[in-house]
Length: 394
Image (tube, rainbow, N blue to C red):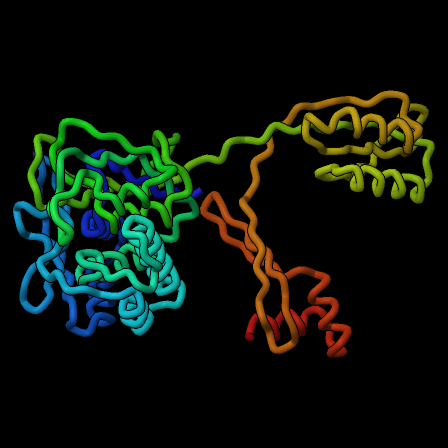
């Protein structure tokens, strides 16, 4: 399964995440060109090579009105432009960008998380919240850039390490605040975090919101066949390399252990076998199938195989002995590997169609539900093949 792992041992900020993900991309210049075109000169993104504690990486700069954001040595992730921006203004700006709908949707969701956290901390409604640092153009550029790159990299699973938040205090528009800042702490609820001997803000509100929105699970890096590594550097220098490390590779899903219960039968009719199969499926069998075999005394027969989970064993055995003539059942323990599956309903000119999407191990497949295709075929007096072609074009 194509997996992205984010090493947040020095926290996470939007610019660092963007730079690390750009290093994973085949054509980072093309991504920057797309983003700069979308921002239409209001914010200009550029990438330069950088080094932290001997580690070569990339540093993202965002220029707004000719001024490079975030390059105040006493500032980590808080820009110079302390304008007050409402959530409505943020939504209008992001919603108006010429970027794919799924990127816009994710960027808006990230800002909704930030707005909800700010509202909780300040005791206001989301609509009455006015952003300071996280509402400025450089922060919006960071959020939109990460969302763009996440979709471009097409990871099937996103994992991250526990998040190093830093220690001490940070100065922002509201004054001197403890690290992590209250809104950041609110966003990091439920996420494993830790402090240490690094003085400063390592995880910004923008970084926390991006992690909360995109990361599926936090913990140690699983077995991963790494194909690419990206390093995004921060502006500050610390005793440790101030980088976010991103690793892209293939991970293996944990095998699910299942049972295969099998028996040989030579004295049941096809109707009786089909009836037994129906009962097994109704009881929750994962699969039931028949294999033609030759049995003693040259009799043709079938092997009935029932796949189930271990906790279903007794129920399946009872069903097999009740609905077949078998006197004995064999048990095999198997490992099952599967693609992850999700469903969506797609609107078409011919009515809604449920789509099953399967993914994993570098494979992505889509298939329309047969019953929905059948219904359209009957209503429109078409063949199934004609319906599939029409749906594909809609």
